[in-house]
Image (cartoon, rainbow, N blue to C red):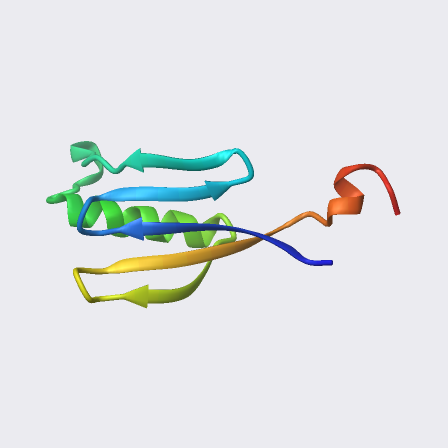
Length: 85
């Protein structure tokens, strides 16, 4: 059975929100001037690129209040994680 983990990048609040089995983890996205982030939007866009490189797939987006991009990433099979075949 395929299993997925989910997160979203919020360009309004400049946060990455990850849904985990242990609950929701929210990380504030900060500018990194050494990487030429001119704004928090640039920092959030850089994060979106990093998510893609780390295997996250863009699944949906919402522009009602501002850009919020939703991602998913396949996780190892539950039985394989437990050492079962």
